[in-house]
Length: 33
Image 1 (cartoon, helix red, strand yellow):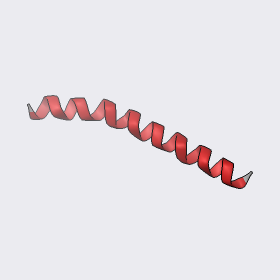
Image 2 (cartoon, rainbow, N blue to C red):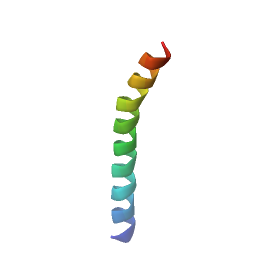
Image 3 (cartoon, rainbow, N blue to C red):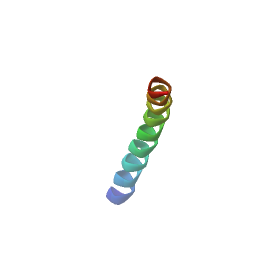
Image 4 (cartoon, one colour):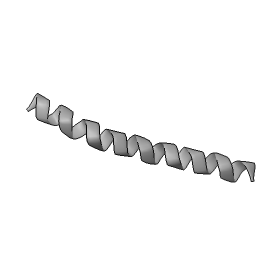
């Protein structure tokens, strides 16, 4: 149970990080371009 909970939180964190990167990356690329 503990391992499952940790995996769930880790997975959620990765998804949130990916979403944040997607929203931040395009803006940075546009500014650099």
